[in-house]
Length: 163
Image 1 (cartoon, helix red, strand yellow):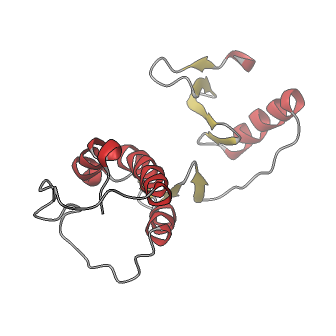
Image 2: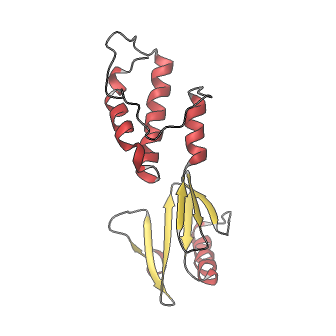
Image 3: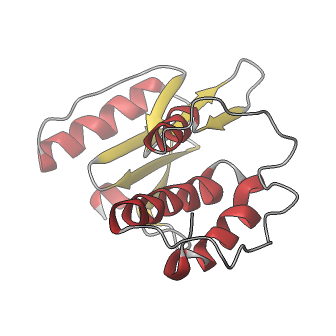
């Protein structure tokens, strides 16, 4: 890795290095990169060296960022808040659902009941369903662990998707 950074053994898209006594972390996914360190000048130095090697990049600094669909906010009480509201809204809007009810749980009480008489989805609806289930699976793993059982059930329905 560049400049002595070591690839994280649990996630090959993360590299770490201790600089000035604190950890500096670089996260990347395709063309999205995030660098973090306690000191802004360390981030600047690392960024400069990466730009020398890989070329110019657009930079955003501050307490709020979007990284791979996740909205990351560093709060005043030294916590990190991760949401994916815009990403979820995009999924909902592609289904054309506008009047959504607030629920205590993402799965309805009859989630696991299958209507055998329900017609199969046509090819366009099937493709949209598959696309959105994949997006929601990503959300379930990144920011909304509470939707995982519902999304995993929907994954079992991909090959036999009905209305």
